[in-house]
Amino acid sequence: MPQRPQLSDEDLARVREYLDSPIHRVERQPFRPLRLLLVIWVVIGVISGAALLFARLLGAV
Image 1 (cartoon, rainbow, N blue to C red):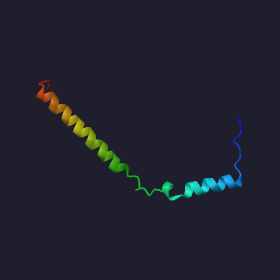
Image 2: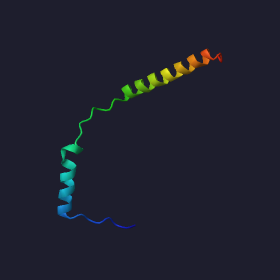
Image 3: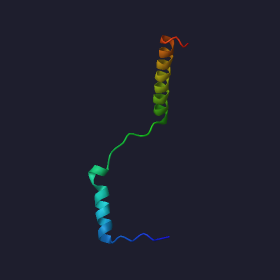
Image 4: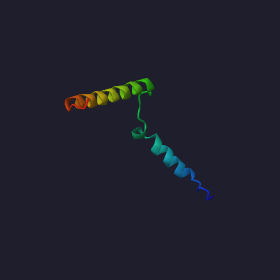
């Protein structure tokens, strides 16, 4: 397996400077799995309701 080349101290400093720049530091809200579950549940409910409505309008149900 080929080894990765080692970076010089100067290259590492440039990488750290790039990663520490403000554009790469985005404050994010904490992940909320229950909110995601609720959104998915609502979307599925709306799609299911629309499908039932169309089926009743077309006389399939």
